[in-house]
Image 1 (cartoon, rainbow, N blue to C red):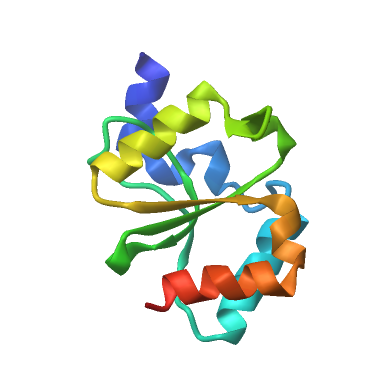
Image 2 (image 1 turned 180 degrees about the horizontal axis):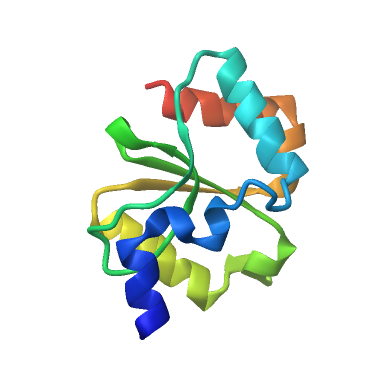
Length: 121
């Protein structure tokens, strides 16, 4: 509980904010695609007002859009695992649009175009 309270009070100290953190190639591909199209976003966005200490992969904060790039470990039989579904539902309850993006889609031009269309509306 102390660790949770500390991280909530000091979100910049969270391991997700570590610059030496492993960079996901699919996530970096999506970020580059968005940057090339002048879409502004924040990486590893957190909000201290949330009940949970979540970090969003790619957040378009002013429009409350969360882009989550997910590896296979996020799914069971094609559906989000319970842990990730709860996170998804919680963020949606706060008015966020949460796009769960299978990592392979970050390398498919037609899938990237679909994502771009959703975030640029």
